[in-house]
Length: 261
Length: 306
Ligand SMILES: Nc1ncnc2c1ncn2[C@@H]1O[C@H](COP(=O)(O)OP(=O)(O)OP(=O)(O)O)[C@@H](O)[C@H]1O
Ligand SMILES: [Mg+2]
Image (cartoon, rainbow over all chains, first blue to last red; front, side, top):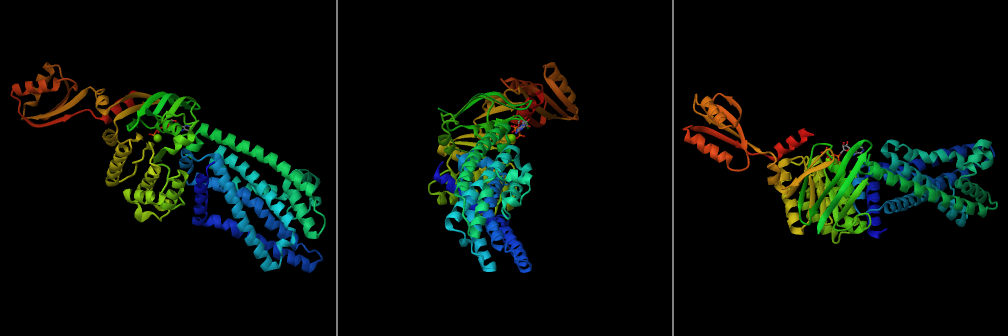
C-alpha cells in the first residue's frame, strides 16, 4: 500500500461525494428523517403512557448510522466505479485492491463520524437528548464495533458486486437492513420470538445495543460481551476479506473487471 | 531490450478462443499497430497486458519484467487510453486528472495537467463534469490521462474513435511526437487504416484470436499481389485494347464504353513493360487510374478468408 495512491483514491471519493447530491443525501437526509419520525412517535407514546422510549430509540438510531454507513458506503463507492466505468482505469494503474478497500473503509468511517455527529447535535436540539449521557468508553467501543460490523457487511456486498457486477447493485443499499431487525437496535433481545433470537445471538451488533440500553438505564455493562463480539467480528472480517479477494480474482478471469458491468 | 514481449498468450471465454497462442514483441520506441475485424481479440490482448484480465497461459514481459511480480515498476511506467471508458463521469476533467496524477505519483502534477489540458484543447472544459462532455471531448480526456505519467509503454485501444478530423489529426501528431521524444513503445489499435499506416512502423493482423502477419505496411501490402489499372481510350478503341490485353495474358476485369480495367502483378516491372507495349500499339489514353493495393484491401482479403 502506498500513501499517494490511497490519497488519490480518497480524493476521488471526496469529489464523488461533493459532485453528487445522492452521496450527500444519504449522510444527512435519511438519518434525519429517522430522527424526526421516531423522536415524535416516542414523545407521543410517553405522553399517553408511562413509557419513555426516547433515549433508547434515539441512541439506537444514532449508533446504527455506523453500521449503515460502513456497509452501504463500501458497496456504493465500489459501485460508483462501476457506474462511471472507472474500474478499467483504476486497475490498469498501480492501484491495488487493498488500497481501494482501505480507502473506501476510511472514507466510510469519516462519513459515519460526520453523519453521527450531525444527528447527535440534531437530537440534542430537537429532543434535548444527549448522546454523551452514554459513558464515553461504552460509546467509543460501540462506535468501533458497529463500524467494524458495517465494514464486514460492506465487504460481503463488495465481494458480490465484484463477482456478479452491477446487476446486483440493489444489494448495495438493502443488505444492511436485513440484519437490522436481528440486531436489537430498538428493542431488547428478550423481545424477539425464539426463531429470531436464535439468529440475533450470533450477531455482534446485538450485544452492542443491549449494552447501550443498559448504560442508558444506568445498569451494568457487560464488557465480556464486547470482547466476544470483537472476536466474532475479527473472524467474520477475515472470511469477508478472503471472499472479496476471491471475487476479484474471479472477475479478472471472466473479464468483468475489464468490462466493468 | 523489447518493451513488450509476448509468448504463446492465450485466453478463452467458455468456448470462444478470444486469443489463441499469440506471440509478438514491440521494441522500445516502436509504434506497433494491431489490426483485425470485430471480435478478433485485440482488446482482449490489451486487457491481459494491462493486468485487467488474467491470461489462461503464455508469458508476458513488459520493460523486461514480469508484470505479475514487478507490478509496481511496470504499472508506474505504462498507461492505457480508450474511447470506450470515460475515466469517471461524475468528476470534472481537472478532478479526474488530479486523482490519476496522485495515483501515478506524478511530480509537479499541476503543471503537468495544465500542459495536457492545453495540448488537447481542454482548458476551457476543465471544470465541466466528464458526463456532460461530448464523446470526442471525453476521448481527449482519456488520452490526456494516458499521458499523465509519461508512460514508457502506452496502450491505445481505438483511442481516436469519434474525434473530428482536425482533433484526430492533432492527436496523431501529438502521439507521434510523444513517441519520438520519449522513445516510448506505443501499442495501437484502430479500424482506420490510414492512421495505422501513417503511424505504425509494424502492423500485426489478428483474426479469430490468431496473429497472422506482422510486418511493415509496405511489406504487408505485397500480400495483395495485384494492382488495378483503369484506362479510358478513344471512341471505338476499347475493344481493341481489351483484345490486345487478353493476348498479353492480362486479367481483364471489365470493359464499359471506352473504359477498360485490368489487374497486373504489383511486384517487378510487369506494369511498366505492359504500359510501354500499349503505347507502342498506338493507343492514346484520355484518362488513367492506377490503384495500388491498400491496407484496407488486405484487411478485407484476410477478414473474408476466415
Ligand atoms: N468478458 C468476456 N466474456 C465473454 N466473451 C468475451 C469477453 N470479452 C471478449 N469476449 C469475446 O472474445 C472475442 C474477442 O473480443 P475482443 O473484444 O478482444 O475483440 P476486438 O478485436 O477488440 O474487437 P473490436 O474490433 O470489435 O473491438 C469476441 O468474440 C468477444 O465476444
Ligand atoms: Mg476492441
